[in-house]
Amino acid sequence: MAILVRKAGIADVAPIHKLINGHAENGVMLPRSLHSLYEHLRDYAVAVEGDQVVGVIGLHISWSDLAEIRSMAVATTHQGRGLGRRLVAEAIDEAVRLGISKVFVLTFVPDFFSHLGFAEVDKAELPHKIWQECIHCPHFPDCGEVALTRTIEAAAA
Image (cartoon, rainbow, N blue to C red; front, top):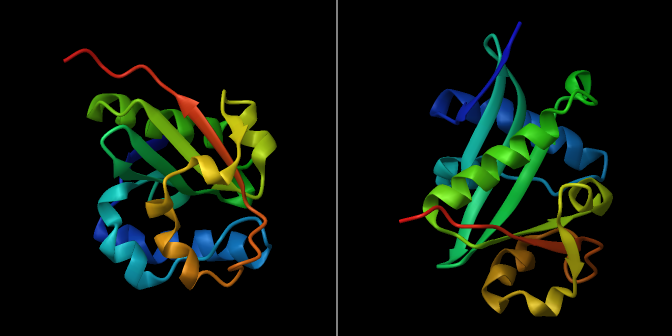
């Protein structure tokens, strides 16, 4: 069965929550509350196979030229098939459509993103505004996430 990547809808929130928090329990990403997922639902795209959510990614706009890729997760049963790469490509395509020139990610698995053209940067290079959610994080202030950025070409106006 083909896997479709599309914008997330209300019915996707519970499966997104389960997918993200399942990976968070394994220490490879940060958890997300249901409240946060509903509040930022428009940031998310999902990969679906039939009626099952098998992947998720968020693109959160931080500023006129900067967006964050967040909460990228692929179901364990679907890993190793290029779905993570496909989700990142979808997020970058959306950033291009929006005219955003740089994306960043904070991650516990930097090698995945470095293979997709992201380069590690010092967290201090990122705007302070992106840290507003950090105070709610269970890892604050001793965060082990690595910051990476990727400059992209914006779509022609």
